[in-house]
Image 1 (tube, rainbow, N blue to C red):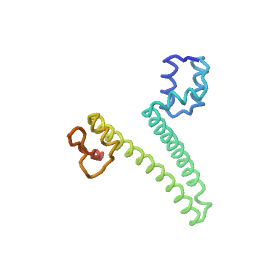
Image 2 (tube, rainbow, N blue to C red):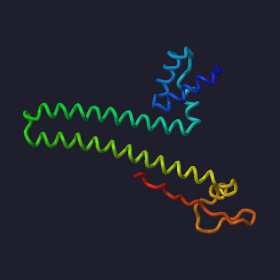
Image 3 (cartoon, rainbow, N blue to C red):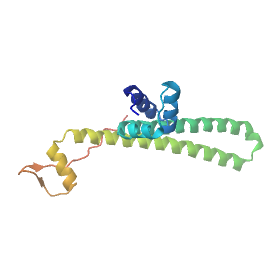
Length: 165
């Protein structure tokens, strides 16, 4: 079945927000009144690495938000029950809660840093000529000079972007 561009755009937007393929198919049926199976949604989204990256970021963000909300609730429960717990139980419960929350924060920070590095690498690759890209693919990152029609081609050098302040 042929689907409209509006349906595909809706699916990509939903995926970028972190919805699963099945959720997107159900949302299309409910919102756009169009029958779409999740495998079609997968095909549309799989062809767009930017959408998949945005989807992963959205899911991680949602998981972090849920975890932080649970951490806050647990912290409030811990505060309410503090008098009933002995000192060791209180310290252990607090430590577990704090470690879990900090772990999620580190995951999100690493994901953002990795995404920034990949974007920077993509920008550098876009500046290369087709011959340079071909040489990089064929010869990798060898130290020897790469030649194509008597032209010396430099290998790509990844320069990390400046760190945010």
